[in-house]
Length: 89
Length: 136
Image 1 (cartoon, each protein chain N blue to C red):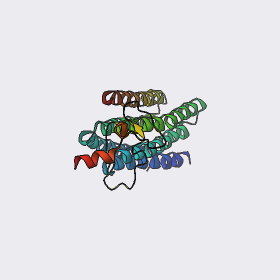
Image 2: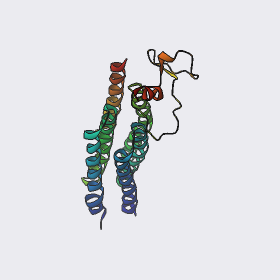
Image 3: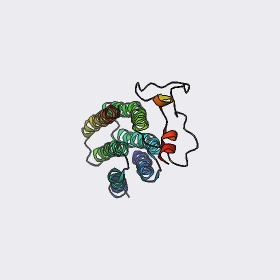
Image 4: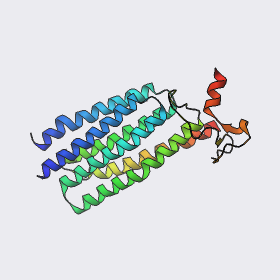
């Protein structure tokens, strides 16, 4: 079993199952805060997908996208928490 | 040899991300979910990114990967703290079997200041325990 096979048949499917589980919480989430956390974790898992794909396709340029996505995840969470807190004031 | 190292790092990274997802489903209240996702997802992403760095073995890519890992390690506790504070203010209750709430009565409702002692202005203090008793 080569590394490429391992990435194709283990890493990508398990990450996909994780995203599906997070989407269940995103739909169910009792409060809006749960949905914000789920969204944050989906983006974080997306960074993992991008890292794996950069190995699979031998294209290190994809890692730049991962960096921007990490930035967007942080900014999104900060903006959501700011506006939820403002709404409750 | 390099392929085995990449495989082991990717395996553990994937397992930690999967555990974060399972924790998000299984944990009983919002604060425990925040705790699970910030810790497990940070470690999982760090290991997956290290796998990419070990696979390419180039100085520029290793620097980029280290920048991503450092950024995630710096920002994920900050966003976890912010979203936890917000959920405490917006009235998300602790799990019913939680033993204690250290912040009870110490946050000021209007100024949103945290005091170290419970002062004698109960109408201005944020208390989830009192709110739960009033609902009963």
